Amino acid sequence: MTLRQAHDARVDGLPGGGYAGPARHVAIIMDGNGRWAKKRLLPRAVGHKRGVDAVREVVRAARHMGLEALTLYAFSSENWKRPEDEISDLMGLLRAFIRSDIDEFAANDVRLKVIGDYKGLPADIVTLIEDALARTAHNTRTTLAIALNYGSQQEIARAAAAAAAKGDVTVAAIEAELDTADLPPLDLLIRTSGEVRLSNFLLWQAAYAEMWFTDVLWPDFTPGHLREALEHYATRERRYGGR
Ligand code: FPP
Image (cartoon, rainbow, N blue to C red):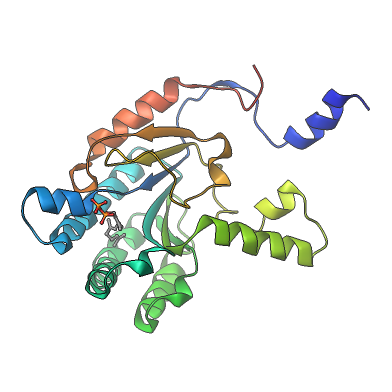
């Protein structure tokens, strides 16, 4: 076997290179709620609340634009380090969001999915989530995956352990155990608010994703910004390591 053939076995699962075209799966690190509020001398909680309004509009836009999956980083496993009142505000917003928006998802063929260790959230939210997952499980138009109590390193460790327990620690076997295993490959990762880092989000899935960093603060992010990122994405040449 030549060196090239040995490597082909490894990259077999990757698509060929070429122009990206329409994205199937977009993920967003929704950053800047606090700064949005601070600029207006408002409490951080107001920034988060406006952040939820932006979430709602962007989910609608994702559906209209035909995205198969949208993954949003709503609460990281490191966010527990925030002050208790802020955690409680975020949990309250999550609770209200699921209650108020689940009917819209159900009516519009949106499947809700959660990645991360959501069972570590308050018990009533776990129940709300599980009801919402069950209600939308058969929807197929767009999957809205919300990352809750999510850490990518933890996800990879869990997946590797599960793969090892089955005696197969290959790339494909680990990938099949990730929380995102049933989603299309990640095409585009967006981060708002001018920070340029991944913050323990989708580290494995981002291996060949395109990245889009914008200075726009999350509450100001509109469907127009999503469209701009998607239009840019479509023109990107993806090589997956080839040339
Ligand atoms: C970053 O802003 C954002 C978060 C900590 C989480 C994002 C949460 C929401 C948009 C609201 C809840 C979401 C749902 C789906 C109900 P930051 O506080 O880190 O902003 P800063 O860096 O400007 O302080």
